[in-house]
Length: 65
Ligand SMILES: [Zn+2]
Image (cartoon, rainbow, N blue to C red; front, side, top):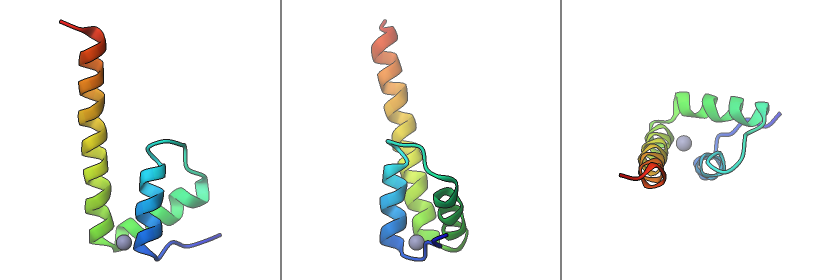
């Protein structure tokens, strides 16, 4: 199994996680890296925030007034 230590790979994986389910090994490596790396943790939070905001926006758009 591959352990992610490279922030670039981690940020790519975080972006991909928005579009596809991650494998067990990928999730594990990702979480391990996020535990150690503040920068990627913040990046992940930002992605979550953007996704949540986008979801709210889309849901509002669909359900309408
Ligand atoms: Zn990192």
